[in-house]
Amino acid sequence: MADVPPTRMNEQIFKLKKKAAEGGHKLLKKKADALKVKFRDYAKNIAETKSSMSTDASSAFFSMTQAEYAAGNFKQKVSEGAMTARLRVGAGVDNVAGVKLPVFTKYDTGAAADNQSLGLVGGGKKIVAVREKFTILLENLIKLASLQTSFVTLDEALKVTNRRVNALENVTIPKIQTILDYISRELDELEREDFTRLKLVQGKKEVQMEEEAKLRALAGTPAPKPSNEEDITAAFDAQDDEDVVF
Image 1: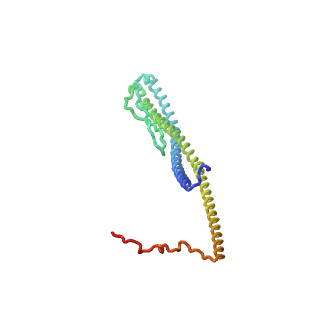
Image 2: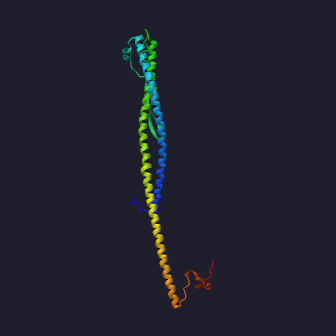
Image 3: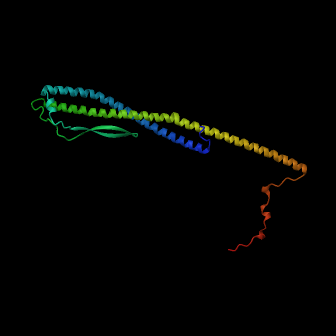
């Protein structure tokens, strides 16, 4: 505070700084609240997705066992195929209160399904059921990966925002308020000093005027006429002015 001169200009500057800090604190508080709501939504969706995935995974692998029992060991035939991916994962961005969250989505490449002849001898329906159930499991895996990644990113953004809110609330704004209080006290002290100084000067002037009045009374000299009561037009004669020709 010793580095801040207690002047009216500095008082106005720090008042504007305090107003800006309070506005930033309010905006960050709203952002933190929005992130908390989204954070709870992601946590709920992750829990629901994990609970459904346990059922989907057990169902998919049980269907695989059924298909192997009905059609025999067809894993080698699948691995001998072209292995062209029919589903791929794409990445996008979701903006939540200024925070960019990664979002993963699946899309169909349009490639033809390999090994369509599997199950012609037997177990065709079981193999089709395996394909459908593992597709559902893959979709849930992609959804869970997207939720988990966004959850971690959102958690870091929420921590940073809360730190900024706490810094403004507990450090920056109180510091600015302390400086404003210091400037206000110093300005009040200066005003009191000026008032006291003026009172002393006025008192000395009144004492001097009383002493001069006593001396004039002893000497019998009349009091001088105040300068503001003199007729300033008496020293001028209107006849001396020259005529103005237009």
